[in-house]
Length: 356
Ligand code: SAH
Image 1 (cartoon, rainbow, N blue to C red):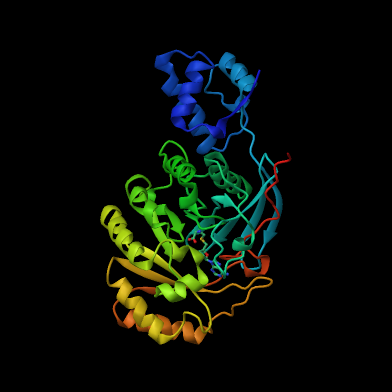
Image 2 (cartoon, rainbow, N blue to C red; image 1 turned 180 degrees about the vertical axis):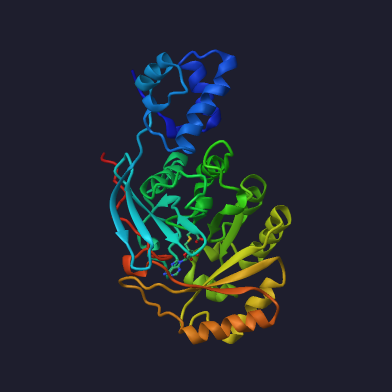
């Protein structure tokens, strides 16, 4: 009989499956679903036989109908700063990367939402890889499950404390899957990441921001990278469609619903967006909604045309913003030596042309 993959169910779907395909009686469906859900997402048990809380007949039946197979890690790269990048091969053989970034008191996992990307931001390596596909919610959640497996993170005290959707792709161009994936990440019976432990980063798909405020509700990061439409358009083609004015409006709304500051990401490109005049322009934007800015060291990659702003100039830029009363932090680059830093992710997957 056809096996289903556990990770392709959300909790409701799992209940439905137990009820329909396994003919478990209605009043036991919730309990059984919870047992399975918890043992996978909380304990990292991937052998249905080891689910000893389930009656043996049910285990046997489940074994033939449900698979807990996960995509495979096909390459692991460790940076000398402790960052780890995993290359994951999906069941359809497409490849996606995710990055583990340990710090002193916390560790962040950066996951992808698409294979490739449509946005073509000029400074971003992923932008040189055409969109291959949207990841399913299972493929998004699997990155977290796989990372937890790799570093054995099933204890009470989570090693991976934070999750950021800042890997490959634009989360808001894969909205439905991202939404379900975030729901699964948040589920208290499962992976149990609070909404304030998750950050969704967008290049500014303005029309999706209000929806996300209501039904995703995590921290939001906006890849702003420029204080004026002229500059932004030059480095981010998406700005032709959604202008800074629209982004400001939608960010205002997001912040009012979620009641948290929006993080503005600002990659510093020498001679492009890093003048003190630019800092002043940025302050004017920041005054319009609760925000803070993360100044990001530009990470170079083979063939890129930009240069990073020098450290001392980043600091001066940051100081102008701080002096105006706003939070500006400088994000130290991590995992650069393994092309694991922001904007460096790219896999070899290509879109397969449909044969005629
Ligand atoms: N599409 C989403 C999610 C990707 S997040 C977004 O744009 O927000 C990846 C982050 O790294 C974004 O802020 C992106 O602008 C930034 N980035 C891209 N290329 C970079 C580079 N070469 N150096 C530093 N940061 C980069």
